[in-house]
Length: 476
Ligand SMILES: Cc1cc2nc3c(=O)[nH]c(=O)nc-3n(C[C@H](O)[C@H](O)[C@H](O)COP(=O)(O)OP(=O)(O)OC[C@H]3O[C@@H](n4cnc5c(N)ncnc54)[C@H](O)[C@@H]3O)c2cc1C
Image (tube, rainbow, N blue to C red):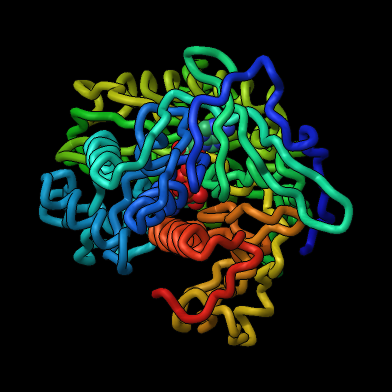
């Protein structure tokens, strides 16, 4: 790990405090219903395990539903393919092409297609976050998962004894009835920020790492911030395009400058700053203008609002930074929507439709597992006896966009110090350089969730803990 690991002290001696009622008992308890936790709960339940799933919001899907990140990908197999097919069958997927959005490819306002040559054909599929959340909730219901929505995970109750790993006996949650406990045999961390692993005493490296080696960053560390997505509907993009061309203002810089001069754009909206330097630059996210992706339906766009660095980096471990980010981003979104309507042709009749329920954390805690997957593992194409899949090839943004063919071992799902916990999704034991942009997207999180669920199901069948389970063959 490039960063030093820390360990938080777990709660107590394995006993649920007398004043907290135990409201559920399960074979498998999953915390967090993002793509990772969702697929884990579904798979374990389909294998016959009794599964309880804890989720603080009102539907599964995490960043991709509650957070409005509805990018639809080609199915990569298993539950991920099933999801894409089910969303499609229900009419929840919208595909935008150059016919619907002429001038979109190569447009500086486009989040995904701005690097393309103008005029290039493109196909951008998105699913409706609300529709997808309904479908995912239905799938969990069909499989018999006991879902506890509007329920926050608070802490882990851990049994400690010298010479062996901690055992989680129960978790404490908070819901409409106050503090309650859920007992389980096996626990799965689907929080996206390894919150359960940290509370149970697993070591972890903090998020907020640096930018790719060799990038021209003028010496300022530029970690990857979280983001809050929102939706604007009723946009006449043809008018915006005409303005970009006739006013020779492709990135709308002239309009932004005009609005800034009139005091209509708050400081930090388009160029978050850290240490007095401009950040983000041209790389990956948050190019210093509007950031759009087509979404959901014609004339409806998802808009990206990244979190300024002042509060972006420790949102998973600092309550005050998390609260500030949420408060300030609402203000930014309101200002951006008003700017669009007042200044930008094509937006006069547009409406701020929706704001994501949570500010997604792109780079949270990285738990230290029995194996920590490193950039070297990928570069050298290491083969592992406990590989979870056949070798896969991915492009490593953090390694000069090189393609590597590699396998991932089951050891990345097993946090150190904890006997009966499995990791998933963005909370796997991966080095920062490998997880960002490469191994934390929706398809991968759904795949690793399915693997964690499969492992939990097998453990219940065999009466062993995840640490005692022998992973034998590739699943995908
Ligand atoms: C702004 C942003 C944009 C992104 N863009 C893309 C993209 O274009 N394409 C792509 O494939 N990926 C994208 N990603 C990455 C991807 O969305 C995440 O890596 C992925 O969703 C992680 O899945 P997960 O299941 O591990 O966690 P999450 O999706 O984060 O889900 C975690 C779930 O756990 C719940 N939870 C957390 N803590 C608690 C608690 N204490 N109590 C109860 N519930 C809790 C949350 O409410 C949430 O539902 C983006 C991420 C962000 C933040």
